[in-house]
Each structure stands twice: as structure tokens, then as C-alpha cells.
Amino acid sequence: MAGASVCVQGALQQERHSRVAGLASRPFGDPEGMAVGEKLRAAIHALDGRVILRSAARESITEQIKGLTFLDPAADVLQRAVRWAVPQDTVAKDALSGTWLGHPLHPPLTDVVVGSWTSALVLDTIGERGKAASEVLLGVGIASALPTVAAGASDWAELRGGTRRVGLVHALGNATALTLQVLSLRARRRGEHAKGIGLSTVAMGVAGGSAWLGGHLSFGRGVGVNQTAFDDLPDSWTSLTDETQL
Image (tube, rainbow, N blue to C red; front, top):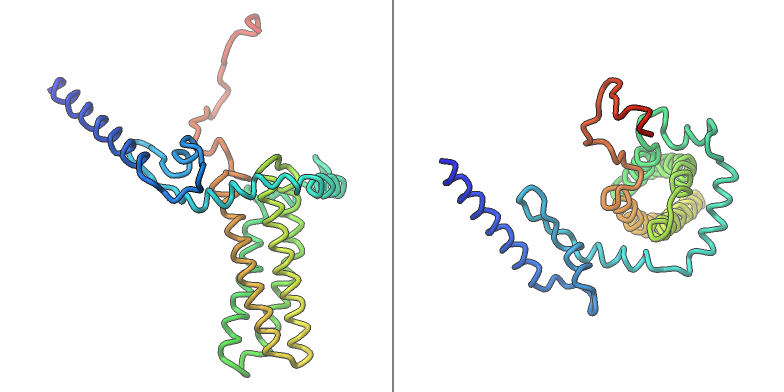
């Protein structure tokens, strides 16, 4: 039985390697000149005998943004400003980082903003009956955006290199969407309802793209994620070595 088990495991490993090699040899629509190593990293991920295909398009877009080094001077200035306004080891930093919540504060706050704006857009489709409620929801989203921006800026202040650039583009997208929604609310209150709907529609498109980048940072790059969440750590005091060995 042991010999049969070894043969089966060997056959499975050989099949797995052939599947990975076959996938690696196929074109994934990567940009011309993309390094083979980068292609493999972007397209194939082998885990526990399973082959998971990543979105090569997503990786290509974010890699392009990560290479926008001309953003660094502005990012340096903004990061220093945020660190000055929200210093490390302060109550404000802990509050905005979500220390009291057990996880980052920024992601759940974005649900309030996007949820309010999406609901307003839905109410716009029912005509006159939804006008008043739509304006209220736009206002709720705009007001909620302020603490959301503050929490996001606090998290972004700790990033470096390419992820900092992606975070900055994410923030610029959010700022653009917020500005468009403010203009939409002003247009609606002036009686220019059609113009307001148009501005909100564009704002939601921009917010959607920005949210996609934010999701990539959190779930694709692990920004703000507990890196030891799946580690099997001891629950009590564990001796590692005698102090005389240090």
C-alpha cells in the first residue's frame, strides 16, 4: 500500500507540474515585453496542488500605476503633512487606524459613502418621487466621506514605493468623485436635476474605479491586513532559548 501511495502522489505531482508548465506557456494577454517571471507571478499561483489564475489585466494596470515615479514629490509632501497632522502613538492615530475596532476603519466607512451614493442613484430612476430622498442620501455620503478620507489618509501615510503610488491614485479618484457629488448636490438644489444626475453618474463611475484600486491594495497586496492571521502562535509563555545563548 505504501508503494502504491507513493506512485499516486508522484503521478499527481507530475500532473500538477505539467498543468503549471502548460499554463505558463500560453499567452495571457500580457503587455509586449513583459518579463516571463512577471507573467508567471501575475497569471499563475500554485497552492496546495491547485492552480489559481490571477487577472493579468489587473496586474498590468496596477503595475503601470506603481511605476509612476513622477507622483513621488507630491506623495512626499502629502505624507509629511498627514504624519504631522496625525502623529504616531497618538489617540487620533489609533482612532483613525481602527485599533479600537480590531481592524482598519477605512474599509467599513467606504460602505457608508458608496452605499448612500448608490441608493441616491437608484432613487433618481423613479423620477419626481425620489428627488428629496436622493438629495438627502447624497448629503449623507458627502458628510461620511470626510472621516473616510481621514482614515484612509492615516493608513496611506505608512505606505512606501509602488503601493504608495497606487494609494495616491486611489485617493485622487476618491477626491474627484467627492467633488463631482458636491457639484451634483448643488445643481440639484438649484433646480438643475438632470445635470445633477449626470454628475452623480460620472462620480459613481470614478468611485468604482477608485474602489477597485482600493480593493487591490487590501486583497491583492495585503495592505492593512494582519500578516500573522493564519500563523499558529502559542497561547501562553513559550521559552525559545536560554538567555545565556543571547
